[in-house]
Image 1 (cartoon, one colour):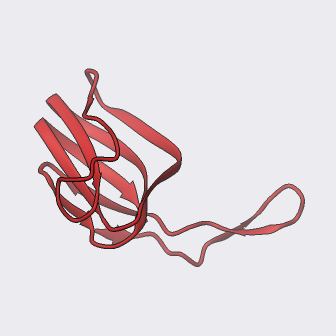
Image 2 (cartoon, one colour; image 1 turned 90 degrees about the vertical axis):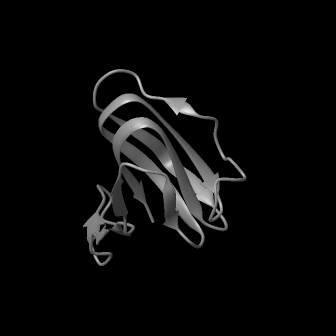
Length: 106
């Protein structure tokens, strides 16, 4: 995993200083624990797949699903969760088929 510096700031068009939140990423091809405490899922980059699927769970195991199983359309893509999906007890990802994905979270 790689951290992007959290001390990055920007100024909006009104002159307000805004902090850009820390976003980490995890590249994976298998199911497993992404984070073992509360956090937010910001998106997924689908690098490649063959009949790939993904499902996220709120917790440290594959229970307490927070979304149904999503089947990737053909090709690479970026899935943006907008403001993010908040998890209170951990983030667990279940990968189906063959997929290489990068999960964006904090």
